[in-house]
Image (cartoon, helix red, strand yellow):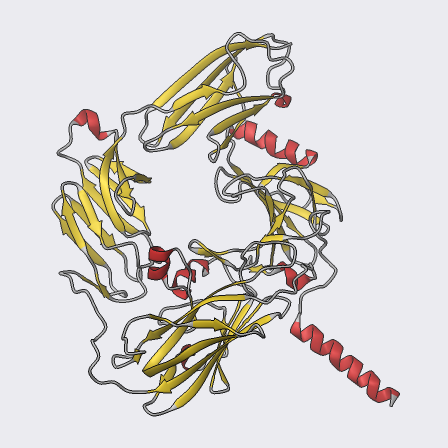
Length: 564
């Protein structure tokens, strides 16, 4: 009996290891507060999967950020956008942890990176220290939480990556989040796929009538369908201590009791993250700002998240049949919600066919395409799109319309505007802009000017035009006035802005010496820390700030203040 129990015990240990091969109790909570999430791993974001956990910092900045384990700082990157101030620590077990949107680094790291910033005279820097330069001990404070870069509020973005730089859900490593709530299902859609397919007498995408039962499960009002069809779902999860609508961990589907689809948000690579746009119904998202996850795999979808596919998740409905389709949505703690769809097979021969808008231009996804009219040309490399389709293309008075922005791109298309008809004095002030949905706003698009051609590279369809920017950026002091004594001040703050093409660069000096001013694009501020101690043994300070926009207009602000 004891021998049998021992064998069973060893079996369960081996089974557990096989189910979760990641080390447990190796990485600690990077904060010393309860883990509460505002964002989960691999949840759906604009053009990418979220690559870590967004950990709440009690709506404030400055919390101690601890190394999740011993190791060494292998990368530091500071940028105006994206991760803002980010720290990467490589550990002896081969994994790397990432800490982003930081307010500042711990003193030894801060001193190291500021020295580099002053050497390069640049706020934005990236460096890859060797393993001897910045060793890190277990439980060492390495930074302080913040809101830098593209962060929408104070929090810590935390990742764990493997040796191949693939992010993995940190919860697999034992980081525990309280979660006893089941995922919520907001809507279910059905998609006719084959030429003769239909759902509830429609050949178009159809929203199904969803009902939640008393036991928490969901049912869809019985549907009548025929042919090859697929389904899509809008869903989210909540954890116990937060109201945030976060991503789910796993979705499975079953047709007549047999599993035919699974997507497991466990790990992905950065090379594939943009293909989220193939997972979701991109057109619906652009029009309704809602992400429907398609529970079938279309051609040219390279995502590695799928498994156990039968017919790529599609089902085939025959006439005069009855079948059952089920969806199971799980969070990381295996709390699950089920949706049941009862399907009556009924073939209808006299339905209106699916609408396809034909134009004068057709794009084959696997071929490059060049479109030209008047003073505009558009080059579309092969495999820019996932599917072949008719594309809208027109040019009127320096305004290019290239389809609606309802189709995702994998690569940049190249837009060229010939500007030879513009006055010479205006050419250097021109830029390419993308019009907003209702045409009431123009967004600057990064472009190159070579002789009489403006060239933009973009992954967004829509309407583009030529804009002109003759306005200089604005520079305004925020917390000081000219001629004042600032001896008790820790920070010097200015507001900078450019309403048309946007800020491109800035440079600040005091008494001719370059100073590090941190740019926060969300607040339009430049901030200098007097503790940098650039100017010594002087009382009179001559501040000079030059700000340049994206077409080359620049403004200069100069003032004098005093310090002891």
